Length: 155
Image 1 (cartoon, helix red, strand yellow):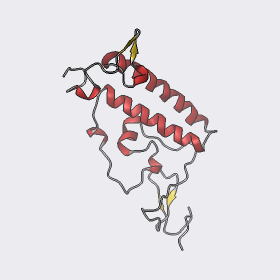
Image 2 (image 1 turned 90 degrees about the vertical axis):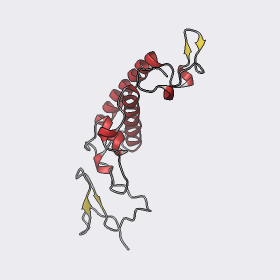
Image 3 (image 1 turned 45 degrees about the horizontal axis):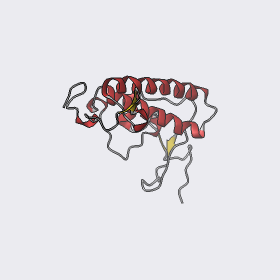
Image 4 (image 1 turned 180 degrees about the vertical axis):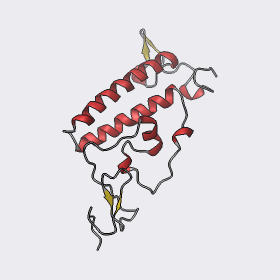
């Protein structure tokens, strides 16, 4: 029987050195190293490309996108900001007293709200909750966000 231990002789360190993986942790069984306060964090673009904000949770069993190959522009930036807000929220579910994470959550929440406001001012509503503009319901108006050939351009 194999049990997880930071001191197990064959354990290997996680990428950021904040934990370790047991050599017998099968990929079909969820195995996540315990996150420590003050863990290293990717910037929002790297976080989106890696599927996690935390390098220590960047496990080697998936194919990731290269950050340079991700789309650019306001929509991609907003997606990355919202991804970081979600990641920090999940982290705070288990680390409610991490003051640094709370401060980052507040910072990224403000950035995401401002990014959404700017995006919707340029391209229209992203959600039905944002579809009322000056007393007019605009949700069904063209163009839809995916109908832009390139950001800022028309159909």
